Length: 111
Image 1: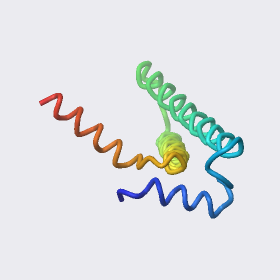
Image 2: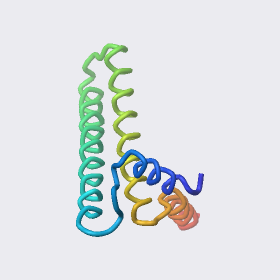
Image 3: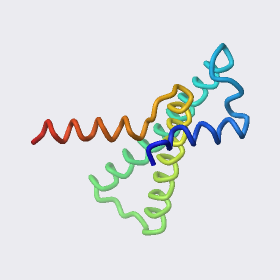
Image 4: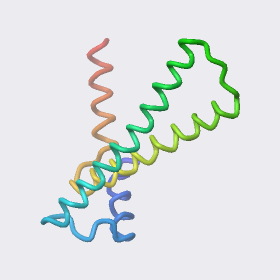
């Protein structure tokens, strides 16, 4: 699990999503992934916003619509995570380990 970022980047390179790591083409690929991740996170935040408004005003939501929203939310978050993993692999950062260390630091700070 620790090399998930590297594997995601290797897969992206095999699929020709990252022709090179450096130079103007590499920076353009990184910008593309940042913009794509932001798009998916924006969709996810809109879903969460609408869900919180619906619950606040106790508007009836059908179970099928709610499960579809949950599926869409999960899908958007997964796609955004994949884009960030590809980006971190391109930068040579192990995103998974970095986030685990950050969470452990925050948990220790709380204790």
